Structures are given as C-alpha cells and as structure tokens.
Figure 1 (cartoon, rainbow, N blue to C red):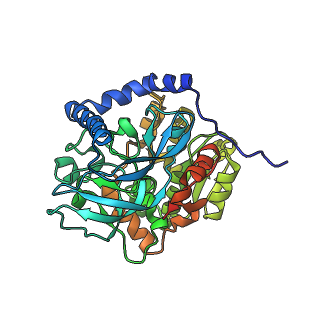
Figure 2 (figure 1 turned 90 degrees about the horizontal axis):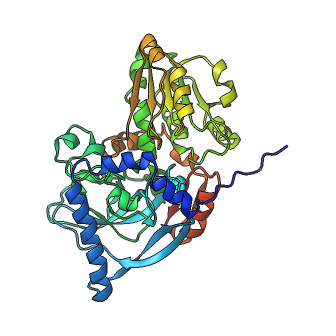
Figure 3 (figure 1 turned 135 degrees about the horizontal axis):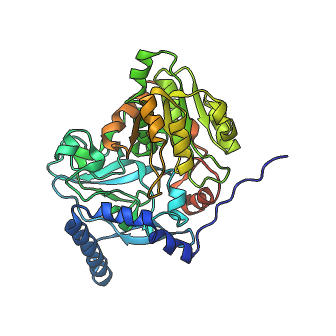
Length: 413
C-alpha cells in the first residue's frame, strides 16, 4: 500500500500567537537583546520611519519583495529599493534563491519568529553596486551571500566565529523579519549587504549558482557537523562510521536537506559508511540514492554506535537518540532546536567520554570550504534539489513546498 503524501497546514492565528508566547520564544527574545538592544531598536524605528517617508514622498524606485504573512500567504509586494550602499557596503541582485529546512515551519507559523516578513536567506547574487571602500568584490561579480550579518573586524569575526559577530546585535540575519533584525529577505530584487568585503564570497568560475545557493546556510550548517570532527576520527580509525539522525516521525515539519548534505559531505571527506535515520520513506529513498544507508527509526536501537553522530533533528527524542548512539570517545554534533530545554543522558556521555557540540553555523567562515568541495567534484549538492523553477513563479512553487514534504526548492532568474 502506497503511503499518502504528507501535507502540512499553516497554523491558525491562536497557534501562531501561542508560538510567539512560548518559553522558547522568551529565550530567543532574551538572546536577541542581551547586547545591542538599543541598536536593534533604533534600526527598527528607522526602518518604520523610512517606510512612512517613502510612502508620503518617494525618493527611491520600487522593487518586488516576496512577503509571507499569516496563513502561509505569499504575495509579491512593491517596496522601495534599499538606499545606495555606504562606503563598506554593497547592493546585490539575488539570481538563485534556495529554501532552508526551517522555512516551512517559519512560514506556517510554527516558530517564535513573527509574521509577516520577507522570505529567503540562502542565495547566490550578482553585485550591482559597491561602496568606495570595498576592495574584494566588484560590480557584476557573482557571490554567495551568507545568511548571517557579520562585520569581519570584531574579535569574534577575526576568530572565525562569524555567527556571533559583536559588530551587530545577536541573531542578525536575512529572511527572519523583525526577529532577525529587519535586514530583508533574499526573495527581493535587491538586497543591501552592510559589510561587503567581510561577507560576500565570490562564486568560483563556472560554478552553477543553483547548485551553490544553499552554501549560504544549510550546506554550511551540514559541513560544520562533519568537517571539524571527521578527519581526526578517521585518522584514529579509518573505519569510523557516521550516523545522521533526522526526523523520527513521518510528519516532521522540517525539510531534510541538512541531514542529506551532512551525509554527502561525510562521504566526500572519506567516511566509508554513513547511516541516515529518518521516519520519512521519501527521505530514506533520497539518502539511498546518494550513497547513504537508510535506517528506519524503529531499527536505530539495533544499529551499532557510531564515532560521529549528527543530531539533525529538532526533537527532544531525536537529540536523546543521537547521544545514546554515539560510540565511546566519539562526537555528537547537534544543530539545536526550537525547544527551551531537553534531557541529555549525562552519565552515559560522561562514562563514554563523548564530546557534545551544539550551536549555529559560522556560515561566512565555512562557505569557502563548502565551495571547495563542490569545485573539486567531491560534493554534488544539486542532487538534493527536488524542485527547480523561476523566481517569477516563487509564490506558487514555494506555497507548494511549504505545504508538502519537498526537500529543497531552488528558484533562479
């Protein structure tokens, strides 16, 4: 008997409000203002004032921006183009925009990020204009735009910890609306990049923008679970195995590109055996086509512990399972989740001497390593794309993506 395709529904107004008032939302709110609160407030106030000024006496031309509002409504709106770039900034035109695994939950109203917002935070873009201090990119160049805002000059950025740049408020990022600091989204005709030299990564010559679009986030997120850990584990044991645990249920709302990318990168870096654990039959089938060993969650207890386990799951149960299936002296790396707290098998971690890593990817620092794997032919991310279409058709294609079990949609134009 063939399983019916999973259909996800947008949250109603009450459930969206409940998500905004949840304990996880309170934690996210505290993190967003633990420093730079005045700067964040001033930026939002100035954005509101600018909208009013441009409505009353327009001084800048208009452009399209795709806005997601309650009920997963997607609409092209006419908004003013960004102001001319400052000395260190640039304006770019997105030419290939990809979905992130979090986008479905975001647009359906299942996250602590309030709607409405301009969607999209993974892209390759063409540089339209640069400030007079910009030296590393030029007009007409194709670049990967990291989803996080980083200045490139603070101590965190210089140390490669670009996700915690102290030059901007915490959690400053594209595509998350007010919750991300109101930086806009990549599904716009123009996007302002405040620190062009620090942020923009030139696309290697001949590389397909569609293939590279997700280097801005999900590919980099996948790489940071594998790249820092696997080479050392393989030096210790060339047969070290990798297990990637994704969705435990058949109706997991989050897309599965990060676990698929993580498995592919593990193979690219020399792992001989990589398991993919997921409750969705189509995701397991996709993993098998990519050379991963598909495992149903019911079979997880019968699989041997692995030297490296990636907790590419947003569930508490998935995190517990990942820790429990990590071998002695191994590494468990988690992409985190939207829950406030989670139990961990502390005594087991201690007794097995397991290293546990959790956090956000330092996208700008990781992007060059991802592009190198693609350029070398060891990593073919285009094999994960399930839907490819035109930017002009974004409302229809993304509406279908958000409501279905689609893995990765990339729009180009």
